[in-house]
Length: 203
Ligand code: SF4
Image 1 (cartoon, rainbow, N blue to C red):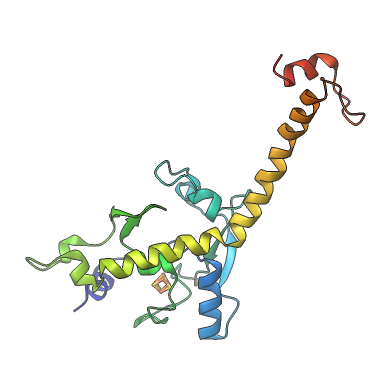
Image 2: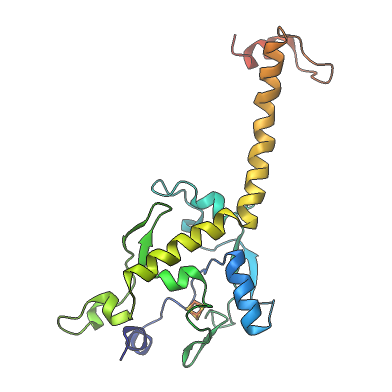
């Protein structure tokens, strides 16, 4: 019996009550398979950990969370279970499941797979049984899915939106730089005091 089945008989599983991030690619694959478009939403996570900067993976938040703190995630059923969880387990085939589901419980960053996240019930492993063998997971497959995950995040709507905000914010120093090149003469639209102008120019 697979470890996930054993887990479901003993405790709440990773498919219950968690925030499952979806890429634009996940959304397209699931929509094509199910014919549904109502399975995901932008939602602010209840657990602030999801919005915590990840020093080991510095782009993660820019790829996954909008400026208002919302993230593209699968919806929950009233019970808190994932919208695709049934009594028989996940109703999506492996190659249609969100990439973060396929990768769990591997831990990873944009650079590679870094280890394992705590969460799987190791106490249910049989003597001498290895976690990933018990889950039926192969490292090569996980490496490929990790690469695909970050490729889709780098092309995704959240990163495009955040990149737009970053470029807009970067426009302010560019204007200051142009002014500095222009001998410190402020354009007519800048109504700040001369004192603040000198401070802004770093003089
Ligand atoms: S999509 Fe499937 S594997 Fe992922 S959380 Fe939902 S039920 Fe679990």
